[in-house]
Image (tube, rainbow, N blue to C red; front, side, top):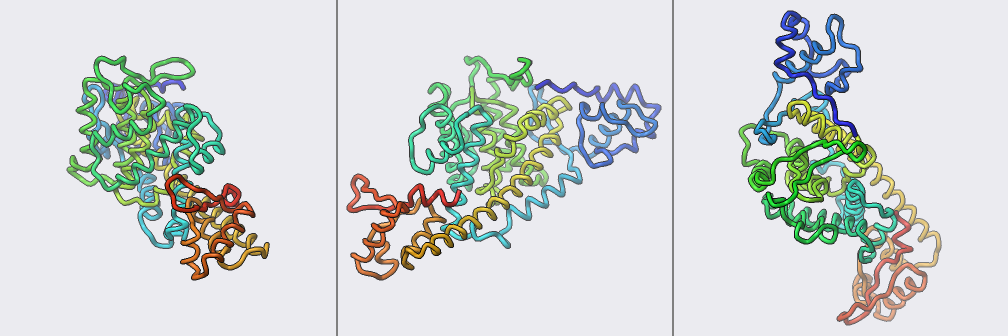
Length: 440
């Protein structure tokens, strides 16, 4: 990726084009089609009549400065980041509030305990895989799914990254109601990088004794971003946590924007030797769940980011090269979130159909009694469930021998696995790969 050309300095433009201010002051912060553009994007387009590109850009900047809202995130010179609330931003935030925070008309898959577990695990797996792939993990999706779903140990670094990401997402769910602290961020980094990074770099920010990391282009080798000095990192991490917990609030900041800025902030500071992108995205999830956007247990933003990695990187660069204007990053992330919500809705509809089709196929076989069909129906929704002869017996009020015969018949048909875990008193039965694969 090539670093964007920095826009002309605002004050230089004012001095140069003061005679054209009447026309310039009529320019809005966005283009006629509502786009909030960087100077790199403005230059190839035709400016409004009577204005050149620099005059057009000056008009945009004046409009943007008028509506700019400061953020507590500062750059390496101590200059604050800011953002502008655009009409498109209002619309996206309304959609996210409507779909991700309420519980009206939510599908059965995310409101009923059994189905909810299946879809939760699927979404955690998807985010673990794609977030790791964004950082270079190269294993196949099928291999990663099998590793997580059936408890196989990671076979290589790529699988370890994915397994770690899965563990970290589960950690976020467990701690979503907790206040964010530097220790919690470091725990998160440790979970994400154990086994993929040298042990002395895991779970700690860089220090002045380390060679400070920077962000460079994989194509040109150009340095794209130089993060703050290591000596500032502990203090900046404390400020990030204060911001996450809304301790700095002087005026209302929309919760979704707060979560997105957490993502930007960690990415800008780049406090760790490796794993910064994964931690940044994990903090975004924590921010959304912490602030009540419960549906984000079932959303994968990395799946969208992975398909548009250049735009993801460019949203960082546009922000940094245009006077710390975080609007670019916020707008891109809002687009990603709304697309991820749409994808989740389609996914839930698809899985609901698959479960219904699998249940019908099992009924159509005519080989199962009503008790077995009830167990299989539950197992399709809850692939990590465990059954015993006793639990099946109690559920259906049948004799022990009848219950045992039901389960052994399902084992013989390849739909349950029979296990005898160490220390367990009897056999445990779990959904087999064949049964689980009927809904994938």
